[in-house]
Image 1 (cartoon, rainbow, N blue to C red):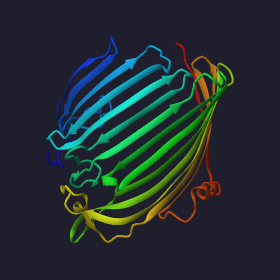
Image 2: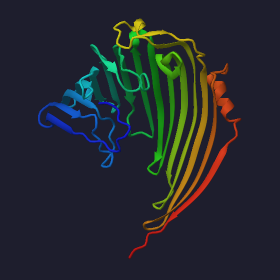
Image 3: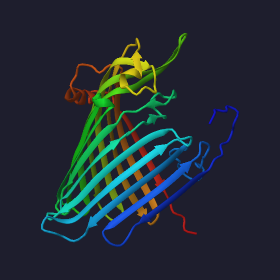
Amino acid sequence: MTYDSTRTALSGDAGELFFSKLGGGITRFETSYQRRSQGFEANDLGFLLQADQQSWSTWFGLQSLRPTALYQIAYWNFNWWQYWTAAGTPVERAANTNAHVQLNNRWWVHGGVTTGQLGTTFCDRNCSRGGPAVRNDPYLSAWGEVDGDARPALVPYMWLNYFRGDGGRSERFNGNTQITLRVASQFKASLTLSATHNVNDIQPHGTIKDSTGTHYTFAHLNQKTVSLTGRVDYTLSTVLTLQLYAQPFVSKGTYSNVRELADPNAAAFDNRYKPYAATPGGFNDKEFNSTVVLRWEYRPGSTLFVVWTQGRADYTQIEGPRSLAGNFRDMFDLHPNNTFLVKASYWINW
């Protein structure tokens, strides 16, 4: 589909065909094909994530609902999906399997593995940020999760994920651990620690135009991100509630080895890029956001909200020598931006 700067509206078509088994026995499955043309646009009716796409996906699952000596409930599924542009360019082929088991102590254990970009596929959306489609390399991703028994006052949770792609040049590890406290039906609090180490060998680094043409540049990014999120929900009465939220957040990284696209269709990774002279740079983003909300339903259908928020933020274009712990301490020396809001609504019963 060619770009037409004079158009004021889009037109296209979409269709889907699927076949599934959703009940009876221990098996479940579904296979479906979907196509959206380049000009299909339905945002007046709802949210459209992407047009110019066709897909075929299939999943098959088994479930065991009878308790055994090892578990209460168990599920397993296998998934396969493929995506193309409407014109037929392959953009993804992937296979995935997952297992979910509730143990006899009422803890849940989950896990899964995905392998993607199988065969010859291309990134046609955001890799070159408006440039040509770039050939992909296969990736492998694995995840695991443990959920504690939800009945006690203290409930633990842990989630881990590992990604490896670009022939081992890119890796990402991220994890969350959370403790939820419920001392009474009207009080719930949680504290979540999240950490990510992201190494992306082909992070987009900007599009540069000069006398020699347009250069779609990429860089090696080494990034670390940590956040701590606290929440409190307290129901003081049937008409009065208090909610608190606070999150300090630090993300910092350094770019290196800047390259530009050479041959985006090359089968060999090193042949797709060539060196480009540019200053790599980096970043250090520190933020703290907190919110307190008091909600009072002073009469049926009529509500008063009293809200206080505080934000602290600092962004620099260099990672800096400070550790993550040092960056956390530094953010509380930043100037706070405080906002106080009052909102009232009144229900008029005619």
